[in-house]
Length: 269
Image 1 (tube, rainbow, N blue to C red):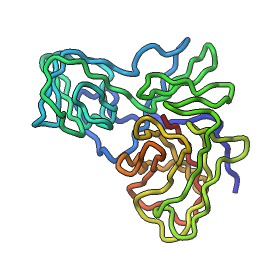
Image 2: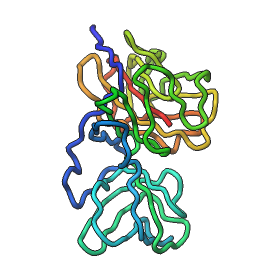
Image 3: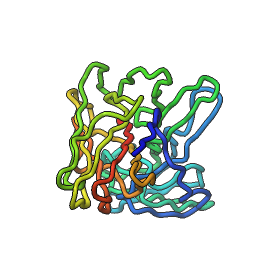
Image 4: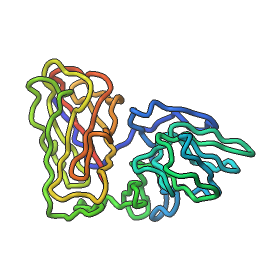
């Protein structure tokens, strides 16, 4: 079996939501952002800031005037009285009053506030300087073209990172290891190789654990390549409920093929 090594994080372009004025998602699905490119470091789009937003504790939604471009489901939402980990579930833009559905009710009533929307995990390539970036809750974060370790929030280059297989990997799954040929792992990003066992199921597939804690619950973006069949796995998602400040959990919504080899790319912040 020949496994093609991936040296950088690759995100599959998602046609869903492109150009649509109204759309909804299954919030358990991991979004695959369209990759962005430009000449020079990115300066906008992480976050998208919307002003004059109004919301209530009674409803998981918010309204504002106008139709700003760039807002799509699965963006992470931050703002006054917005619970941590809240994300966009639906978008309805109009020429007058637009509305955004969100995954959690606000904790207080707010009128005319500014809300930020982050396409967390979206990659960006600076074509002039051959540099890579990814959108995180801290803004555009360099993933370093030179291969040096990258600091995440409250991270240090010298801390350790480890991997373990979850129940969804099946009975007898191999211990996840960092890499394939010419790849490596840092606390923030890398590629993990593992082989599934028998009786695979849904739920937790891989846990990433760090020796130094984030100052918030870890957030990661992932891609999975089934190296045995050379196909992308699209039923993955970041399990916010099981993740913590020292670990991140990758889960799947459908059972994967037993005994197949997986290449799992991760970016965490």
